[in-house]
Length: 198
Image (cartoon, rainbow, N blue to C red; front, side):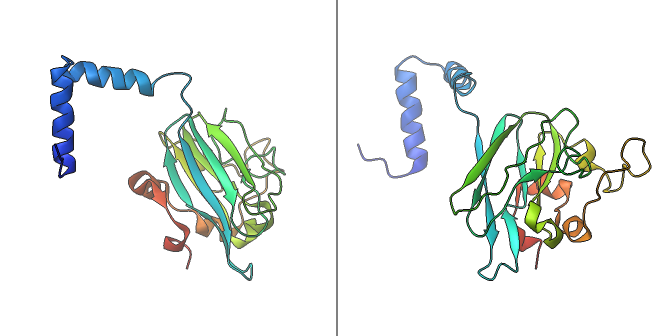
């Protein structure tokens, strides 16, 4: 039998399952158990670290990303030398812009095309990060993990005047302008740099 369309293929598959005596509810339950297996790998999202030939324009692509908790995010160098570094006081006294209780990261310098670094994000909230050598040029990114919340979902200067934050460094103006909005990320799931940065 030749199946001419995707719809006919799915219909034929449904008939085959019915012929085996498997009810649709049991098929869905079996599929859910397979997806929830603890030994199955975490979902993976990839963010490219980019630069134009002259190095005058640098960016993460996508610049904004929505993921579910438990997703692994991998940054890969495509051009130039970059880092992916969470906004966190443990990273050179930067202001806190990841969820409290989340583990901050710093990839160190990734030098060669193909070099990569990854983290698995489990705590829901907004994660803002930057490239150490290019932060002042606006090379930043934002990831929304599940429900938006935490310091990354607040104004950039929310911490000013609070005890214990006197040494924190503010986010540079060029970086502030480069971040896509949280609501836009939630709606579109992926926001690419060329859509935000001219």
